Amino acid sequence: MQGLVKDGRILKPEKRVLDSYTCDGCHQQVERSQMKIPVGPHKGKWTNVESGCKCEDIALGKQALRQREEARIHKTFKVFDQHSLMNKSLQKATFDNYQPTSQTLSHAKDALEDYTETFTEDSGNLLLVGPYGTGKSHLAVSVTKRLMEKGKRCLFLSVPKLFTKIKQTYNENSEFSENQILELIQDMDLLVLDDLGTEHTNAKEGQNSWGHTKLFEVLDDRAGKPTIFTTNLKSDQLVQKLNERNFSRLMDGTGVIKMDGPDYRRKGF
Ligand SMILES: Nc1ncnc2c1ncn2[C@@H]1O[C@H](COP(=O)(O)OP(=O)(O)O)[C@@H](O)[C@H]1O
Ligand SMILES: [Mg+2]
Ligand SMILES: [Zn+2]
Image 1: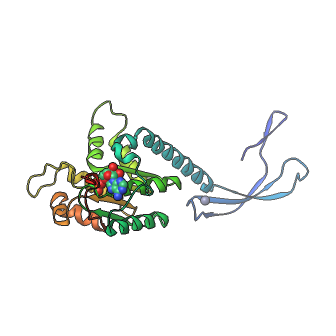
Image 2 (image 1 turned 180 degrees about the vertical axis):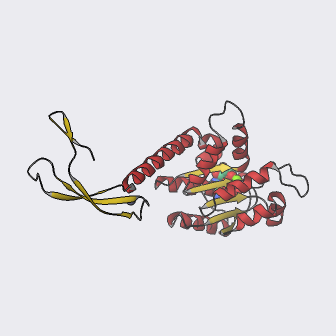
Image 3 (image 1 turned 30 degrees about the horizontal axis):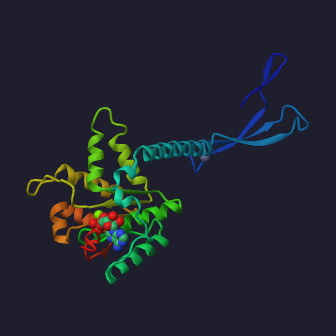
């Protein structure tokens, strides 16, 4: 309690301690006391005071920390230009310019639009499976675009490009660190991991390569947060490529959408 200065002397207001207790919130010892009001219209009256609770300070500190963290992630998101990591042909992809060439692909489009319309943090994962050129990446991009219009944070990354980016951070003069990339991945409301299984794993039989370990880390970071995967591989090929551990992680809580059909790029030939 700060004293009052009067005639050059510091007057300490009269105070009597009543009791103390431990605050449930901050676990600090809080002192309950009465204090005699030293000046003003209520001078001489006794008033109750409590001191020692840190709840408010802690809340403010946490808020500041959260704001700083968000600012940092936002900065990484800007520097980490996902547009530049996306193939030109996909940059224009939307639900509206996707023309399904079969019933199966029409169902796939509907399912993904549904997923987008009803999207929440509990939406779960999706795996889009099918051969080249059926529009898996196209539809996955469309989901991110529409969700971003609704203010959701989304990131579309092909697995090989993600791995290249991570490896670049091992350079001394890298713009950002591996941790920043992983933090970004973790922070997104929706992450698309495109072309799973095309990354170079370079694994010897029965061993974990760098790629396997990194993929596990990424899957682990995304645990419980919606992620869309796309792959050209069949499930047995995928198990072989990713290894068992990654594959079971991948399939945990993941709905599969089959996207069989002709290669759209060969249309008209
Ligand atoms: N049904 C479709 N309607 C319009 N464009 C399509 C369709 N299917 C594929 N495309 C286009 O063809 C190209 C290849 O599709 P993509 O989504 O990359 O296929 P996948 O990821 O299944 O290999 C992309 O430029 C995409 O925009
Ligand atoms: Mg693709
Ligand atoms: Zn408290």
